[in-house]
Image (tube, rainbow, N blue to C red; front, side, top):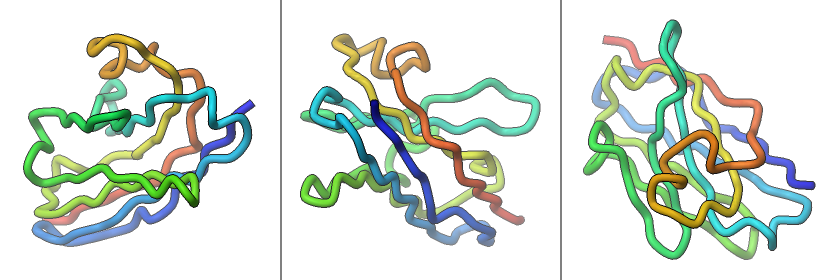
Length: 123
């Protein structure tokens, strides 16, 4: 079993930055990919980024967000810069073993999810 805990969300003005953390525990050795997703009110859960051997970003955040990991601490980060009001959402980390590009970009590619952390970007 794997447990994921997100932290680092908060309120920030447009143009600001935040760093989200995803701390993993349990049988993490079975997971080869960690993804970040977000869900805004009234919208479906949306892919943001994943990291496995490589990192990949949704077009909406590419160039502004950076995903990274500290393997020794079993923690994955999402560093967000140049934040926009449209980035406002609950951000979730997820872990699993997707084996295709499309799986890594989709909710169904992951087995474990954190509880989410709220990011609010004011205009």
